[in-house]
Every structure is written in C-alpha cells, then in structure tokens.
Length: 346
Image (tube, rainbow, N blue to C red; front, side, top):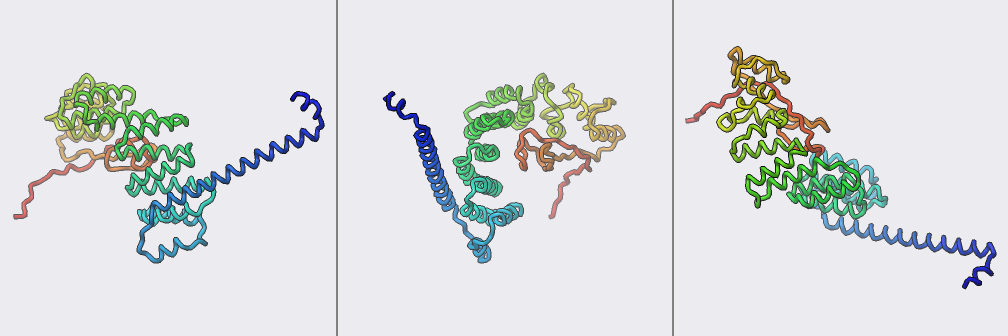
C-alpha cells in the first residue's frame, strides 16, 4: 500500500483528491442544510396548525388571505394589536407571518413575539408550547429562556422554572436572585412543610437574598406569629415601610423595636415622642403634624420598578412589566386620612 502512494506523486493527482474531497463535503453539507430546512419548515407548519384562528370579522379574514402584504407590515400590525389588547388578532397575524417567513432570524423573532402575546393574554400553557418550539430551533435565545422560566413560575411549576434558570446560567446570565425567589415560592407553597419549617427555610434563604426578608415578615403577619425582635432588627426596614405602616398594633407594636428607621415610623404614627430627625421626608412631616395635634394625614404608597421605571399600585417581587426581580422602590405619599363611617340606607 505504501508503494502505491510513493509512485503517485504527480501534483495533478493530489489536486484531484483535494477537489474531490471538497466537492463531497460541500455536497453533504448542502444536502444536510436542505434537509434541516425542509424539516424545520414542516415543523413550523405542523406547529401553526395546532393554533387555529377563529374570527367572525370578514375584513380580518381577507387580510389574512392577502399574500401581497409584506411580513414586516404583518409584524408591525400584530405588535399594534398586542399593545391595544386585541390579542386574538395579534396571534392570528403572528401565526400567518410565521407560516410565510423563510429566514431563521425572522422565525426566531416571530416565535418569541407569539409566545409573549400568549403570555400577556393569559394563555400560559400555550405560551410555554411556543417558547419550547422556539428553543428547539434556537436553543441559545436568552430572552426566550427567561420568559419560559417566568411562565413556568406563573403556572406554579417551580422545579421546571429552576431547570430553565440552569440553562440560562450556562449561557452566562445572572440568575441568583431569580433562583432565590423561585425557591422561596416553592417553600411557601409546599404543603408538606409545617409553618415552622417554612420559616426556617425562608430565614436561611434570606441570608443570601435579603429582599426575601419581606416574605418572612408577611409570613409572620399571615400566620399571626409574634415577631422575634432579635431577628427582625437585622432586617432592611426600608423594604418593609408599607407593611410596618399598616401593621396592627395588637399584633406587632412597632414602638418596641429600637431600629432607627422603625423608630421614625413609630414617631410618624404618634407612638413615641422622639424629636430626632429621620431620613424620610414624609415620615418627618407626619411626625411634625402629630406633634401639633393634627391627625388627619396618613401615608399611601406607590411601587416603582427601578429597571423599567413603571409605577404600580401594589407591591411586587417580580416586575409585572419587565419581569425584573427585587427591583421595587417603595414610594410613600402623604394623603388625607379617610375614616370609614357606618352608612345606613334604611
């Protein structure tokens, strides 16, 4: 066999072998790409058929049948329908665009937007189906993985949500706070654990995720357990401002706590007569009003996301808009106290 290669040292022979190898590799690569493209197209078609569009509007049906409308226009129109809350039309347009598109980047974008639309519409199971279909074709899409984790969280499938975080972590994403939050939800809704076990696990978890201290305080409040001052005084009390302001003195007398910020709240509620000036302007104003005998003011609260800057009327651990974790900023506002009166219509 060695003599065979020694005798064939003609450069033309080597070139023929080289070009033959290149041709074979190119042919196999082309065939494989064509096969995968055909398989991908077939998969998309079967996927789209699973989500039948039902609409009684003739104009809308005509629009869907018009193949002259560019994909960009369909996507823009679908986005507009999503923002206006007309999710049925938005979903129909995304499905149509998905069926027509041939470029991989466009398919990735259409699948993601379709999943988001189902998510916003409240069809969480369909949303997971779309995100999983997208990840079959584009497994390294971090946004899709992030929303898939959130969707599993909404479905209370916390183990699956944490598994998705593992994939995100492999891609280099920071998921520490999300993981801690999901673990806290898993503990809270684990009916096999006693209240004492839940508190122990939440306390241990809050050592590495301080924003979960609020969950511990909420758990004390819901279960009516007494607040251990030794542990409570180590908390970040600014993150508990609204809860401490609304706390029933019969359950927890906040004036017994010596933490500086809690003393500010106590002074603003008229529970102590300290003259120390605090950090919070609103609490100082209320304390001054109490000192002159005016009891007609109180605090209301807004909750702003530090990431997307949207405001919400209730507290959140995960921003309803951008899905950020531990991004809430509690904003106190002085308002007039409203007293409930017994009104009889008899």
